[in-house]
Image 1 (spheres, each protein chain N blue to C red):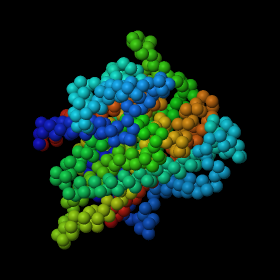
Image 2 (tube, rainbow over the protein chains, first blue to last red; image 1 turned 45 degrees about the horizontal axis):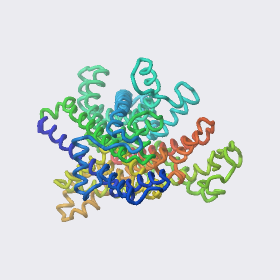
Image 3 (cartoon, rainbow over the protein chains, first blue to last red; image 1 turned 120 degrees about the vertical axis):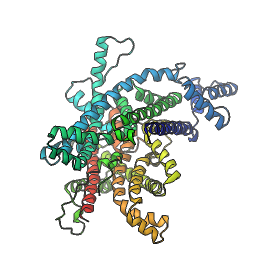
Image 4 (cartoon, chains in turn blue, orange; image 1 turned 45 degrees about the vertical axis):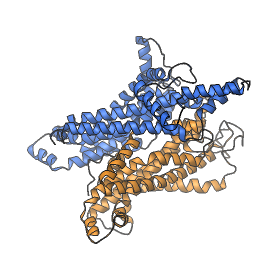
Length: 333
Length: 305
């Protein structure tokens, strides 16, 4: 199996994940006992104080069903849903912010989420792996167990607890950061960029802390196992320095499972990012979803979830495609 | 036995270190199980578990009922942690919250463990096309971010949900990780000698799965069970914090939801927000230490034998 076969297999999985994901997204609302269209009509009717005639309601129902792709039998709906989502990237208009297109709202929010998420994940991954490597390589020393202790303390703490604690500590008890951060939109100027970075630090710290613990523990476990390998002993007998053995022999090999693990845990990292955005009122996809969920704005919700699946699956694909560059064994197999 | 290093399941990785047991140690009954982590973890769990299940019997009033007491009372002998802006006793709300969260966690973990064990064992042992299709679904369920789906479900069934439904939904979307771990175990076992032995002796697939493989993986399943309790409590609490679970039911998440929505931070009601944070961190640490402690113990037992 060469690189080509590996890439083809991975790409097939990617398509399958997208397909199943989109199908679940399509089926979810249809399996629910609640019909969004009824909800909208109810809302509109209560705003009009019940003055709508039955004909007007029937007409509105037809319009809404066309708008939300609820016409025809379930199979026709499914096909037109796939066509709209995959080919046109069109999720219809937002209900709350009518007639703003959902895709416009998502495209506006996406850079915010990606910026925060990528920065925090890279920092957490690098820091966690470095600390974990040191803790694992020197696992017989007392000082190393202190490093692992940090991981044990951080790892089981849920995101929302970390977020609230960070807020409590760094914005309330030690008011270094603003309690309710503001994120200016519109034209970017340098002072604005500075303000955005300053205000994004709290959510970023939360995300880094959350990813940090897991990386330490996992890397430590891998490094301990790798350090026991015969080739590391051979390197020691050969006279390779501690540093060379730790970086070239242990790290290179322990790195590979960590890369795969990163690809697999992207979904969870993404969950954390959404939650962090909601708690810190950070204007990304998470906040949009939260607002849409309270307002019953289903088009926005489906747009956001479709994009989430797409983003997480694509990021996983990219990481897995980089993998052969790191692991020569796949190339030569 | 060293765990397969290519098995990239975080749970398996975190619990992976096969700390080879000191061969000289004497085994006495269940004492081999005990190590520092497990002891601390179990003590935390016992205290919190027993406390939250026994104490509610002595509760002076149902803490989820609003306006039982005066609002915003400070800490005192009567109200240990004061009362909140809704006129509820914070201490009793917290006790009920821990109880409900633990119950939900255990319920979900039972469901997830059953599904994951069946799926994982059968995929790993039967193999072939069946395994490939099952693993496709497992990988998809792992890849799809859970929170957006839960947010949509929360929005759709808002208000009409019961606490039990929330648990069911978490089971439906939470079994994949564990199934992956169990399958990895089954894969490594499939080619072992004692399995062949059983097969040559005429045991059928179900027999082999139930009598040969299951006892071997049960230790991992126990560790996975505890991790799932963690995951379930965390997921429900996450939904509750953003107001999409049944927030009237006291849980570790809903208490923070109410504290945040009544701006406990601004009004300086520290106990309302700090108490659930401390309780959650302690509980999660207890669960995590128990799970890694068990794993260490099992690893060292395997090392001895």
